[in-house]
Length: 159
Image (cartoon, rainbow, N blue to C red; front, side, top):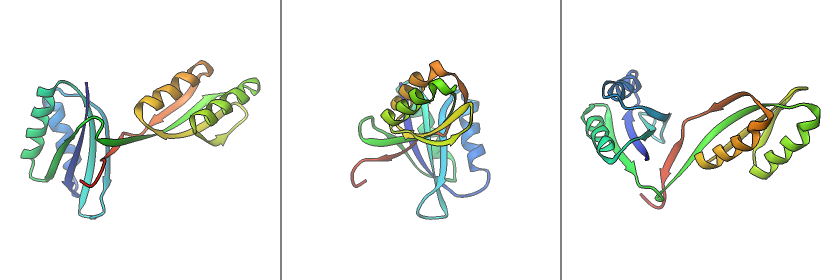
C-alpha cells in the first residue's frame, strides 16, 4: 500500500541527502519525492510517497523524527488529503493521429504546451490515478518522453 508522508524540515543544505540516506540504509524505496519551500523560507516541506506496510511506515516516521533538521512528520491518512502530480508527456504524433491525441488531451483536461511536426507535448496536473489513465490512453501513440514530478499533498480542512 502506498503511504504519503509530509515532512517539514529546516531549509538547509544536506537535509535531502540525510533523508534519502535514511531510506537507503533501511532498504526502503521512495516512489516519489517533492521538496519545496513553505510560507516560511527557513522551512521546506518534503512530500514522500512510499510503498510498504504499516510497520515500515512507522519505522520511517520514527527514524525521520530522530533527524535534528526534521521539524515535523505526518503520515497523511487516505481520503483526508489532496494530492497532485505534474507531468509532461511528449507523444509521438503522426498527422493522422493528431486529432485523436488532441481529443484525449481535451477529455482529460491536459494542456498542449508544445507542437512539432512529429510530436505533441502535454502538461497534466492531477492525481496519480488520473495520470495513469492519461498515460494508458496515450500509450498506443508512443511516448517520446514522460516526465513526472513527485506528488505534493496537503491535508484537507483546517489542520
